[in-house]
Length: 64
Figure: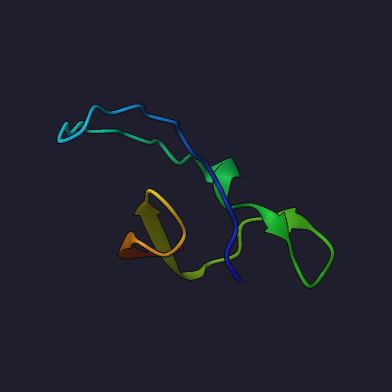
């Protein structure tokens, strides 16, 4: 399952590059669990970053 957890619109001129930083805080990872609670569940997650949903860079992390 994929969920949009944050985004930032950045306008660039042709050929221009820019670094964009996001801070993902603990509330970012909360969702409705199978038990019907709004909480962050531990486990392995992947983060996708890109200009659209197909052309992305991927990284992973584990939430404890």
